[in-house]
Length: 289
Ligand code: PXL
Image 1: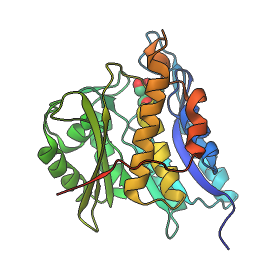
Image 2: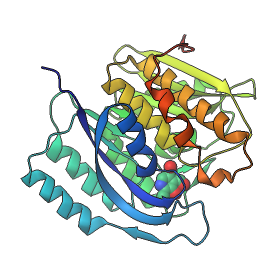
Image 3: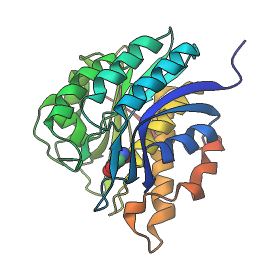
Image 4: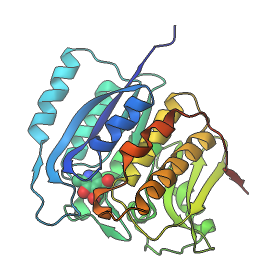
């Protein structure tokens, strides 16, 4: 019998201010009918784009929590890692994936490292080196264009063009993941931004693009990967999951953009979460040549 509620292990930080990581992951999965078991990697006063942030990495605590979960024999339908407290935690996450691996499980690694060509404030090149190891264990990875460039040791150019992005996605899939989704891809028409998904087994590329608004909100990557992952767990196809995630971010950005609001606070998730329960009404995905 199919399970009434699926369970996902979410390995991310908890940031008190700004809607990133667990503050965004938990409400999205809950709204989409999936139970979240949170394994916090770090606790922060706010995300790292605020000045003066207080940051506590939870390396030893994570090890103890994982031991406890092993004693409890918990099984997960999916494992999803995001922002890590430091490069040393990659070994912990990698061990977690080995310990909790089951058949037909979705393992998602969002290699959260940076944006707009730069690493986030708390990270150095050690994390990039270690992240290159972690992505090999995933079924699906969801780097933005900056993170894809760091993973492949390429130079980041905002306007690298679709053909190059497709090559990057293939190269990343050769490291292990069956699905590679690259976000924050600028379109030739400068007013659009796209997410590109590559499915290695079928060798197909899917694209969903939206009109670009001149604002950048932290945490949209976490919300995006959460929606794609939850949609796949709900049984959606890859292009529909991609479509739902891109359109959710678009709705969230539009709900927030018109207000006089500090963009660092992220998108107003609370105003748009319920749209995740609506049936898919428009599909704007494209199959690329
Ligand atoms: O969503 C990315 C993210 C997650 N966690 C923390 C961050 C950021 C981006 O700035 O600072 C702590």
